[in-house]
Structure formats: C-alpha cells, structure tokens
Length: 80
Image (cartoon, rainbow, N blue to C red; front, side):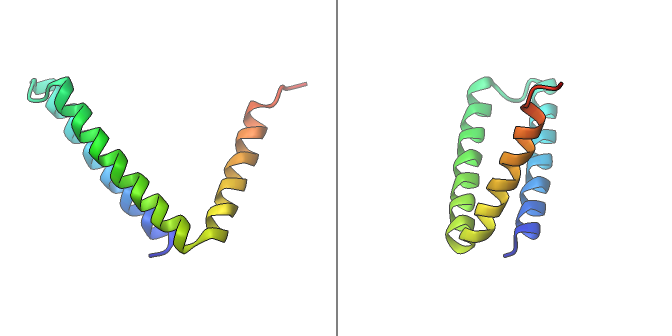
C-alpha cells in the first residue's frame, strides 16, 4: 500500500472516530474509561501500521521524517 492511500485511509478512519466520539459524549453514551480504551486500541493499531510502513519503505519514511523536521524547524525558529 503506498503512502498516499495509507494516509487517506487513516485520515478517513480518524474523522469517523472523531465524529463518533463527539456524538457519544454529547448523548452521554460514552464514559471517559470507554474513550480511553478505544483511543488506546486505535493508537496501538496506528503504531503497528506505522511500524509496518517504515519497515516496508525505510527511505520514504526517512524522507517524510526529514520533511516534517524541516517544516517544524521553520515554524519554530525565532523570527527576525
């Protein structure tokens, strides 16, 4: 699976999960413990998927990390 499709898949899942959590909180359907359990499970799934992607595409992962580092460096650098 290429990076763009993987990113699109997880963004779509994240949006769905966010909507579900927000509606559940508003209706009183979810308790904090339920939300923590779901987020922990989804976080582990995301970490596993990321690990798999990095193992399959080490150079792409390195490029992505370098690009993110450059952007963060530019955004966090002091302005003159």
